[in-house]
Length: 502
Image (cartoon, rainbow, N blue to C red; front, top):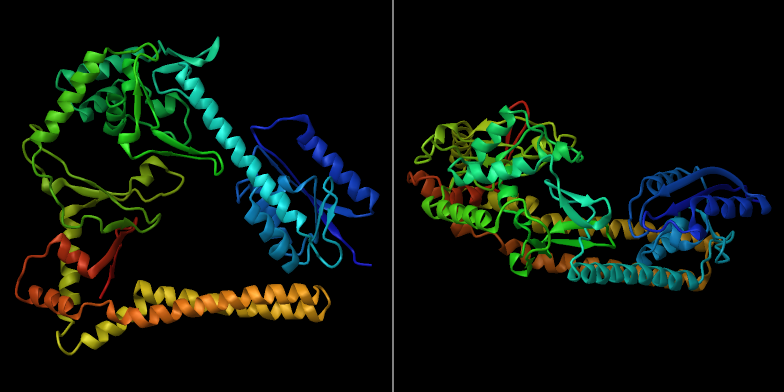
């Protein structure tokens, strides 16, 4: 008889603290089942406060690694919804991942046991669909409930903007935070009096005023006030008693919240709470900002726009163009690039290197000259086309589909071995074999399409014109550089790497 090394997986969402799904109850049910059937539990995995729709959870990720390493070959859960509420993921676990790793899967309360031969019936997929329907239905109800509460004048967000607090007597109301109320007022008054956002930030830092992220004890809080923080406060109508709805889009399935960039869909509700500043003050600030935009005239287009990236976190470098004290002229020699993530999300990037615009422009132009001088317009055309074929997006897609075919062929071999070892039935073999064969055919079709079109993507005349323009002394522009450069990466030691497209 096969010796099983069982793992039990327990999960509870933060939103659902009901007794019938508590971690303690799940542990009792799965442990008692293992004892009664003589299975040895070697490991317990607990995700407390994580949604079942998430593909990645700390304990789940550890369990997947342990299964791949053969540490456990049996998984026991109270019910399938503890493992996942995603119907597609349910099928992937039970039809692919568990069988491929010889893991016996048991759902105690649903009386599901894949058995020694790792066979799962169709009820699992039906339960997966039901579980996903449940979480989708819950998310709709949450949205509808929040909408109704907003319409009735209630505050439904978990956090308040800097300057406000949730009412201790009613969590659906906000009250002004008296500790920082005066700071908000001072910011508006200084800006109306002609002080710039940058100067306001400098003033608050000189007075050692705690900035909003530190005051609110936010994760990855910055240490100082910044012009961006000041502008966020100046642009937020919440401070004059109005609330913006639809500013953020929450996905309750994926547990994400993103800013809605389509401002036309934002809804402003007036007089929803007490304002710190007057509506007249807020409108005055917006008028000043609008007039400044008009006065700024034509926007300065820097040479390396959309080309410079951080070599460490791969995020696009932020460009900073400085102006003179009177704001009437640009200080081009002082302008620079830096990684914004290194300052805002310190744990994600340590690259605080700032590189002067003039300096990096010179380096790039010299490298471009060297690159183009190597290209003879007539003699090198074929070489350039060969290079393009090997490094283009189309070629990368071709490599991807070829790798997929290799994976599917290996999967086909594993499937055949399982049939020979009587791990799956003939009918199961035929069904899976047909799926794999169809996937291979699909990849082959994609390869044929790409092969037929990829060689015609490079505009040889355009390439010759680029090189000829340079040799004729044409000025190098941002558009010119984008034709021959994919990206420029800057590292913490000021090392610069240029990825050419030819």
